[in-house]
Amino acid sequence: MSQIRNRFRSRGPREVSFSKTDTGFGFNVKGQVKVEGGDTGIINGVLYAPLQYVSAILEGGAAEKAGVRPGDRILRVNEVDVEGSTHKRVVDLVKTGGDQLTMTVISEIIPTR
Image (cartoon, rainbow, N blue to C red; front, side):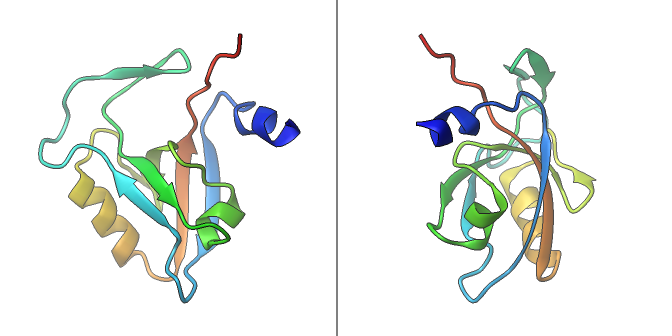
């Protein structure tokens, strides 16, 4: 139960860094495909341009070990602001960044009842 609580404790963005392994970085990205910009959205009370997000995590993979979570919204990839960027732009930054990846991500807080 404490792991679930810890998952949603941080309200602000966090930086995660990890290295590529033989299974890659261990996560998938999903989000808008074609259009730069688009509608804004509010995450934890803060307004953001559209964000790509982590759609899946490889269990035991590099991303999971670094603390990346399914649903995390991606704000920066290797020091490049990707707020409002297309899916292709974010994937290209991940792929061309070499064997080390640093991302700034934010988890949406899910209210408890």
